[in-house]
Length: 285
Image 1 (cartoon, one colour):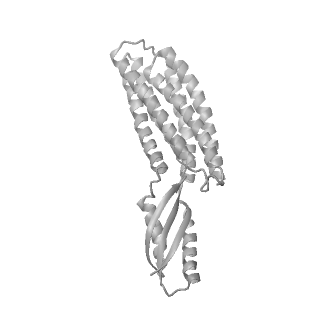
Image 2 (cartoon, helix red, strand yellow):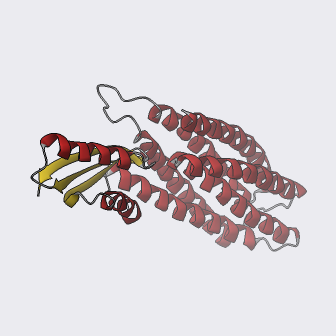
Image 3 (cartoon, helix red, strand yellow):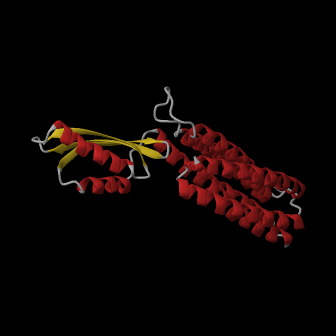
């Protein structure tokens, strides 16, 4: 499927870009002892792991349904996105502690013009990766690619702060470096919490939102022969939902006629992009 091919391509590009940035940031970070750059280096290490998990999770979720997994493997996206969020939480906590320490303990910050060069290269690469991955994420509604896209744009903003820290370091205002490092950590931590919650909700079978539910109800209301509905339930299946409900029709209709109404409605609801499967039970009014 194009959805999984594009997700795989986005993850591979992310892996290549993040490994390159990890190497050059690490070298300059250790040479200058810049907390902001070292924070960015750790962030890139997390990005490499995230991209690898995106690739693996996408590969698993793309498998067709089988006898053991009747509804497919779509939830693999959310399992791996939760793992990505947990890694981000650990990295951000470490970076925050390290940056705070640098504000109260003397350390040898050495300004280098390469800080500017690395920041500029990072912003260009990450912006390009963001524009591509956010396009794929929106087009195919893929939470793994969405997490990667958000991570790329986060890096653009955070590296811009890193650039400000480097400018301040050039004129001897070194404490800004530690402040930026801690801000980077807080930013990553907040995003990781949001990603964790989104993944957790799906894995706990949280039902669809009201917007999608109302969209389905509008389809049902187009059928005047349906007198009432109840037992409306939805269960996430990867990035889509399985829907089940009971409809009530005229008790004088034949079994064939009432089931024809249900069959037609099932097809109409299943035609909605966010719906994986529709199951309708018929009762006489």
